[in-house]
Length: 433
Image 1: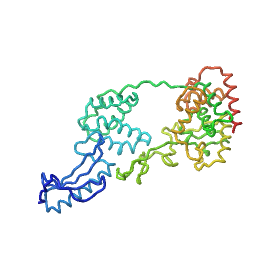
Image 2: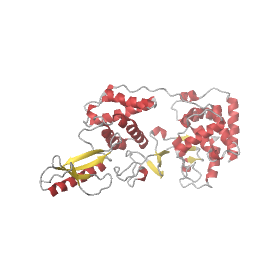
Image 3: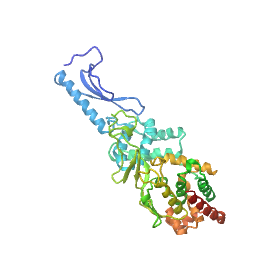
Image 4: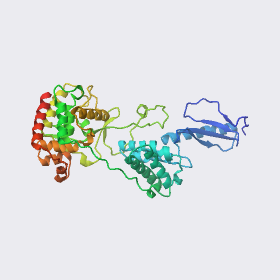
């Protein structure tokens, strides 16, 4: 038997690093224990403790406690920095779901969205609730937490959706006997009104970047905005476009890859003490096995689009044909290790966040209303009509299944004036290069 010390607990006098845990003798019940600190939903530390049976000599019990501590560390590292306790709470389960289910099955951008929702909204609001005792009121509390932060109805609906996915997985694994989100209606979402640039606005944008001399900030990217407005392609599809997929001979652009920023994840179980996962020696990307991707640099990757319909060959039409030809001649004299059509001045890929900022600067320069880059597809249809591109080709470029949808994108306006402006703008841009 180990003699009781005068203190309630007698800890071993062994200095350990943060996160290593400790073993100690608990005088209250004459037991040796192993304890390890873990993250908690409220940001405070919580401890998982394992006790050793009161058998054998004191040294034997102490050795058994050290072995328990090693087991705890291994379990923590295996489970991404957490340990499932007997009273499983929402935070522990949702993190386990992210690591073991959503991570391997969802694409990295989707998994990152789930992770943000779990850590910023679900864990702070109901993370300490026991999973088995979760009620409809708890679900409503979680939704209320989101709306009271002033976030949109879409954020509330996404939080509900992520929680529901986690609870369905818990039900399948026998962790709960019901899916409590099924008892609560999904939050209604407010319809978002798109700000659509007209064909006139589109031409103003193109004329603004085709002027000479152009503003320094848009000089190298003038063809970038022409491509956005004359292809309707997604941002990542154009930022990830390489010259080997621009076929001037056959007049096509291959949009089979896109550029994405993907967040690195810690692969160390949270033990490397690095705040940024990108600096973790064991950093990794959580992704399903069928996700096709190629690393570019840092956190930027080429990846295949989600849908097979998004992998497409689109016709390269005038005036974009001439604009890209001029851009290619310019790029030959630039440092461009990744053979991208558009790069930063040092040859690095353009980060999507910088690209967005540049787009809004261009709209301001052109003196038109602000609009999202993704909402420029309506403008694309109008501009292609004004460039006298055949209707069947326009349908193919924007990826519409029927021509009636393409016609629905077409606005009414003075087409003769727009056609004339389009031709003059095209000549200016090609000449400027």
